Image 1: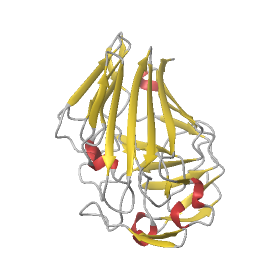
Image 2: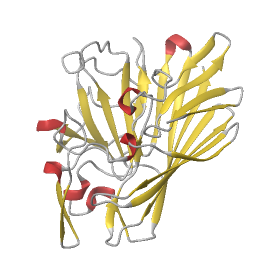
Image 3: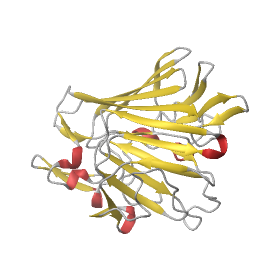
Length: 295
């Protein structure tokens, strides 16, 4: 396992080979370094779930009952944690990534997956430019049978008393049993972030549809904002706010806004919910841009 540091004098980044996860992303300000993702323990042993951001590949979230059918083939997935009976967030976040190239402002990691229903090679490209971090995920299917793929990220952002979030949506999925996405519903006042607003101070674990792939997080106490842009535009984001009953010690000090190229449980939707069919040798990529500015 290894750590990789990038710094361009405007922002600083530390990435771990464990899970291909981000442990530190900060901006240099006159007051010092400002965390733009949840600060994590900078160690090559820090698991992805305690990091600041990790990749979602070959899909994000969960597949209902760990089962799906695709092109006349039935598939079963296995649980990959000891606390969730569903296969969670794909494979990449639990694995060791290899460094292909590193410079002062560029890092290229690669992971090869060769067991289970999915066989693929995925690459992550981290690039710093002024006050912006770009992360590109590119996956190539290496298995013999075509499979449905999705990409995304699971960033954790600092949550302060006055944090405000803007991320457009047309509807959201209610949460069902076992943290699965349930039926779609119209946006309630509390769940409408088409205009900048505060986050609920209670459990939230919902996907939002009709997104334009752009979001803004404001921290008025620091006079700081972070703009997220996804290319191509992700149609879905997940919003997560934990709760002390689920996570002892949680102090409403972080939240997640997770861009995804597809809907949760798209494997069991007639249109695949945005998942992409990849045959052997085919690939697709997704990019997330995070840009800091003061206000």
